Length: 431
Image (cartoon, rainbow, N blue to C red; front, side, top):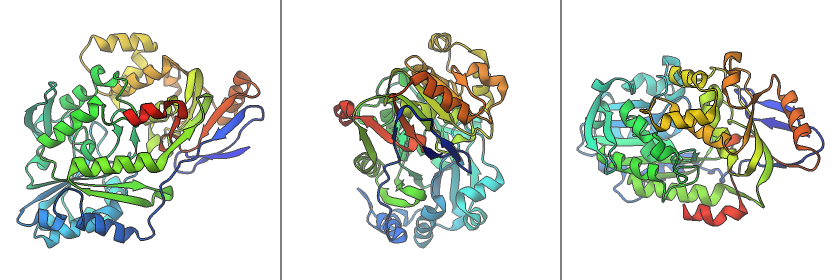
């Protein structure tokens, strides 16, 4: 059975060995809009819970727009133009509208990546800046949240008269869903704020997972921080197949994002009868599988449908290797996942420990196999699972291990598939 997986920029075609019973879970895309431009215009002119953007911007001297970095396939080239046009029509000049690349603790975007993210015309016509989470002087202090998180947000965002975020909504391994508040924290936050948000008190909460919003303590914390930062307007979209736009949600940040989440749940959740014995998945290809760090998302997403003790085989290109320095160091320092979890429970939070923490939590209940050709062999003993030199060898080993008749989920687009067993349907509705 020939199957094409999202893998790097080119994809990966594999032959699944005979024997197991394969359940292919294609992404359940929402229907793409027939008139994308009209959809975006209407969302901006008839926003949810607030005045249209032109009226909101009238009388303001400056604006700041937070946009996703290169690791997210946000359609900024299509969503930015109508938004920017309304700001200019309202009287905010181009040189007073700052576009911030919301890197969080990711590396800064290169000049060529900024063009890829925004398009050459916008990149050349507006002030565009990278967020730098490691530089305290670049951030303004806003106090602490009710739970004690110190809040520092990029000054260039705070000092603008109008605060906007531009993103898209999909499931997220910690915050439940992306978009909205995430473009402020962690997107524009100082490293100490980000560390607190990714500490074990949030990461190990069973509600801080994909698809969970209402009772998710991390989501609630991010909403509080966004309010403190003066989040005025959100413009989020939902993507369809081929990264076309299916829906747009603009307006008051909490209300608009909540309506977007409801739409994603309704239109994209894929229910399967019960958990499966194993899963073959991806990290959704470029740009998500640029690093091993990002590939963890494919593992956590698949873990919801695989039986305890089952195998998750993740295939990701990892063209940029393991990830940032801190993450790479932690991988080598802790060859044992349980010792890693115990250590970080009693020590100060370290940058990027949270991604390994989420992986370690899955490793505690599942077996993880990898085909990640861009990851240096130096790290193969540190990934808490079995590494294969080729996709074919990994698939043959899975067939031999699972045996004939095993139920194996095949997930070509990895974390873009929002799947749950029907036995958990009530739980998803509750969170």
